[in-house]
Amino acid sequence: MSLKIYNTLTRTKEDFKPLEPGKVKMYVCGPTVYSYIHIGNARPVIFFDVVRRYLESIGYEVTYAANFTDVDDKLIKKAAEMGVTVPEVADLFVQKYYEDTKGLGVREATLHPRVTQNMAEIIDFIAGLVEKGFAYEAGGDVFFRTAKFPEYGKLSHQNLEELQYGIRVDVDERKESPQDFVLWKAAKPGEISWSSPWGEGRPGWHIECSAMIRKYLGDSIDIHGGGQDLTFPHHECEIAQSEGLTGQRMASYWMHNGFVNVNDEKMSKSLGNGINVHELLKTIPGQVIRYFMLSGHYRNPLNFSDEAVEQAKGSLARIENCLSALKHRLKTAEAGEVDPEIAAAVRTVQQQFESKMNDDFNTPDAITAVFELVNAANPYINREQVTAPTLELVLKQFEAMDQVLGILAPEAEDLLDEEIEQLIVERTEARKAKNWARADEIRNLLTERGIVLEDTAQGIRWRRS
Image (cartoon, rainbow, N blue to C red):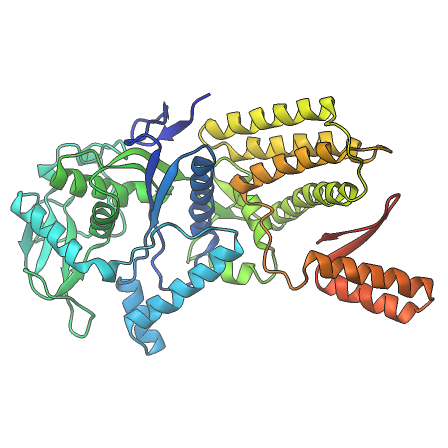
């Protein structure tokens, strides 16, 4: 089965055909770095990390760009509150972004462009739109002339007259039409600004992504992604700007993830129910958050709750216990041949996993395939005789699936496997010598480091909690 992607533009699942064979150019809108990312921001970060991983696993060379908006009204306000400069605010929260997304098992994108580092390209882009008649200057601001782009509204599937204006599309008497949106904002006294043909100012939100995509990935890309809330106006405006300037299709596939609710309520400032990832990671392991995010289909809403977290913890524990048991049995397994029944089960799981991921990145059903492997492996592990090649085959399949999902990616660990093994040997010797104090001391040390000891018929085995 070939890879199919649901395209917001056409509202259908389409066969994936990259612009260039074997290569994928992908752009996902990143955060405005005036604070920590919240769990709503975390969903696209995690999901598109999986998209990138899966594309690479099936042989594509992926160039993945995810931007930082590092100048904006919110950053200006935050800088004033903190008594620092806008760049200092941006640098702080870019660093926090990297720390928190690493905690979620997210790999850094190929490129993380920042708005302030691409100001010349943004100004040139706007100048090109003005020259072509797609934009006009009014009182130091520059606006996009939506009437000049007849397809405006094609992504959100709205007629121009019926469009509901987004938060950042301001009503302004200087506009030729209410739908026109700002490309360049004249600077207010004391604000951070850059020189341009229209005076001192800074770019509007939408133009930033169009300019950076063109600079780093080209006039046309394969996949453009982001949260559902970006469909309109942000992505709609990007299309108008980019296609107006270049005359080329901006992106072949538009992908949007659903919202994350909290206890069945939409996250909002008025409700005060926003949850930032930085705080969440202090009490919940990153793998658990990641598992939760992938447990629902990316286009559907997710509900974050204590119950959902506990379910994710329990599910991950089942997988981790199976892996721990596999590795423990491998130490005493016989040489022998691969068990044909297990080999058949592994092939079935592999096919199921790939089939589900090929069906618009259906991660919840792909996770079901992981549990099918757990169900096949557990009875085999408990047999009196097992062979090393069979266990290695199962472990290899687990690793292949986790290379895509990343739900079992290890976090920073204080103890290496060899050190743990040595401590367990030392504890066993202490117990034989009836040195109960030392035995308890070692168990406590291991427990503090997240190591759980289990007694089995094959001896003591350990796993990370």
